[in-house]
Length: 450
Image 1 (cartoon, helix red, strand yellow):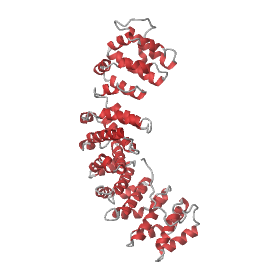
Image 2 (cartoon, rainbow, N blue to C red):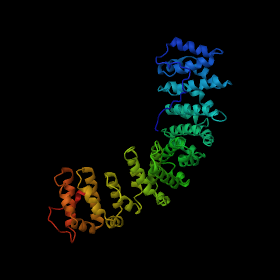
Image 3 (tube, rainbow, N blue to C red):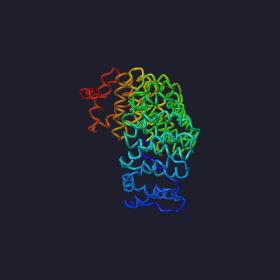
Image 4 (cartoon, rainbow, N blue to C red):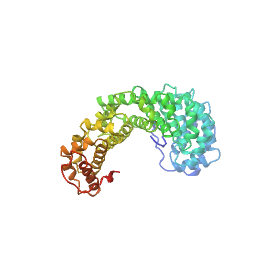
């Protein structure tokens, strides 16, 4: 879903073999001359040329020939539909080249590719879109040429197409544009001045009903816009936060009933969009009114934990940025304490006495004793950090920890080099509090947590 090129190839129905070896330059030249001559065999020759252009060396030889790309552009803009389609496929093969010089040789066709995004067959429009997207990936020169040619208004018109294949291809082009290094200053402002953002949001949120292909593409587009740090206010004004929140709840409902293969591709960018919006805009939390969100987040993480574990850190990132609300506490305390969940709880506790008191009142201490006894230094380290914050902001927590036998569990880690100073610091913090002087300890080392 990141910067990449994509290739559309029709199924080979005629049994012809795809060329695996580069053509000699004289054969490439002869093939071009055959295509240039008016002939009944032009379509067949173009098909042969298309197969030959699947090889990188042949691509390079072809674009070096005088008039080669100009010939393809001429046939691409001609009136014979079958020849036009074959020429388009040849240009598409060239756009997929890993050689930037080959892609830039295709620059004369960009204005025609844009023109043909209206009023043509779905198959032809799809081919034009993926060719554009491939060219955009490769070259800043291509992108700088496309902007004054009106690519953003053309895409804004196309995004209202009823065809899923066209929308998915359009999302691919737009996602490649939005990842360009010049996007924050030169591309995103044009996008925001168009109808694209509202339609992107609509298509993302309707993905469960109308197909996830286009929804995935546009979810990544929204993510790239959010990451630019230039347009979050505009997205929030469009209602992106409540809309994406509702979508995430719907995703959780669907995957909890039956595992939907491929839905994780939509879930990932949706989580990132919400998480990053919350990280940057403090006013976003007021827009999170849906009480189902926390439950949905844990459902998503639980459902994907085994089959698609990469989703879990994404969910915890969003969860981490939701810690400004105390309603997160009871939900967190109903789930097993992994290092990541403990990190989120630490972020909650860092907010001060009110949050620490709520954690203590909801029996966080007994729940911590289990993971605290584990031989996992990362989990234990996060437990120690959480205990430190609880003792600091809620002294009664330290008293109750001692009464519940917590120090005996802590002592298990006194011989672990990376933990022993922090363990001793916690024991000393507890001893300093009235009612907690149950055992003696060495001089305080609470500065280990400072």
